[in-house]
Image (cartoon, rainbow, N blue to C red; front, side, top):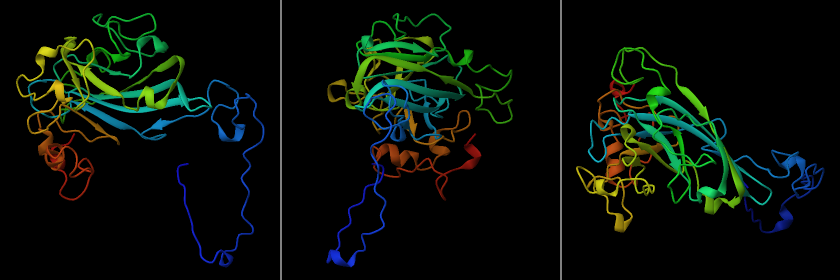
Length: 314
């Protein structure tokens, strides 16, 4: 169903209809799930049928965060830079049974020791198991299934300290953000999340989910994408302080009074600013995009004429 066309012709007799191949929707169904082997990704597994990649198979998106919320800070959006590709595996009924997210930590321009995770729309007990997390600093408490304890919805922590994932090279501020400093190879983390029972895609939610960072290992100081609600463990007293203009009653979160966010989701691998360079001085259309709530310059991150100051991009 990636491309469906409707063609009308009048008179129909002018259209030659012979010679078209007839699709065969029958055939061998080895696992007995009702989907022919030729049409599914898991022909030998009755619990799984289809891979569903986001943004697309072989393509990464990027999540980038500013960690000084509720203050704007230097606004360079390189404090945590994570590429992602997420595969939601569904069964023959198109319900989610497993998620295989891949995250690549590319940079941490912060002096803070930040964690990263995401929240799903389902309850913690709807997850059977999680593997692949990188948790080293003992401030994240887990349930037996790998979800974070104390949460109303399932929260999955990917790592709890970026500096234990990427190793500081000995010079420069942060890692992979200072021009001229040694470059550290990005680190890939592959998680495997198995559900205890199939869940509809509508109920489960869509990648990259409610992604967030934990600023400097202070558990209550979460930074989310704009208008994404905090988790149960966030500190609500921080909303509306410093530069934050959240209004929890209106569902407004993590925006300044001018709609500037503290986190962004880009559907391709993002060219982030150098250390201490405001994103508006690197990506010149970011400001109009953010202040318009995303209605203008929806392609602000692309390398088009007049869109970038390349000297300020790492």
